[in-house]
Image 1: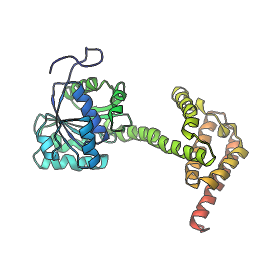
Image 2 (image 1 turned 60 degrees about the horizontal axis):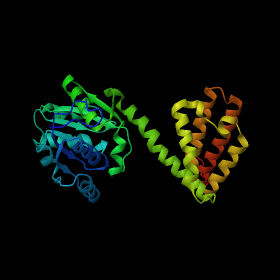
Image 3 (image 1 turned 60 degrees about the vertical axis):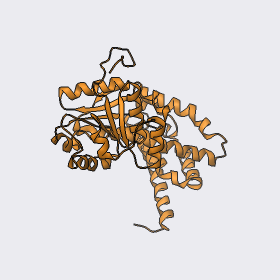
Image 4 (image 1 turned 90 degrees about the vertical axis):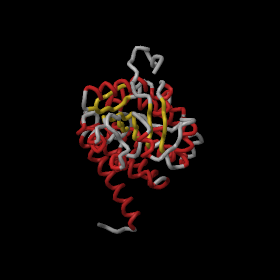
Length: 316
């Protein structure tokens, strides 16, 4: 390969140049496009859905779409960017088909899995590693600049593969974090709990504002949520504000009544998060235990009422 990597110009470029991608989804297509921008050759991709084909056409123009076994046979560095629950079966199928070969690098981007899931590839002599971007993806060119500085949760088991991971991270302009095999699911749970559940929370908040007659729910929430997120990342529990921390039982009661009336689907998450917030506020000393008890009793009653409404009054 020629030239120097983007970034400082001093990072070591990955030696592999022939990259194949099995799973041209939102993550795979974006990472492959970024590596191609860094000078690598993306030789083939696999993606069966119409969305995958459209994504490949937009981000990986000119790259042929082949069967997974043909993709694996065509490359030096195979990226497996399939859903977590499919990964083990995909690796085993490719290995059993003889599509993987000795010396090949097989990489997956799963947050949940470490290296154990790649054991079928290791048994045929492939070098295995994991590289999970801690980022949410749209599957479009908007994602490419977001990779700069993105944390990459890595796993590798030899000096050679560790050096390779470091080179790939430099090509992606990401920041490596090494995650132990036995902690991968916990690491991934933290990211999913923070990012995925945040989307659910924000979507429910938007629906509540819409029910309240607010014309621009997103514009109303954006400055508030941006400030709350920044404060939480900087200060943790000290950033908590609002009626739970203050012990405003009557305010919370009014919330529960209105949410149950106008957006009952949001009530379970409001109750669960209010209870968790009360527990954390007690631990840091800002909510008295007696006030927490009053709040929790109120939340329990709302939860029981929602259950009765959902079951037609049945008691279990």
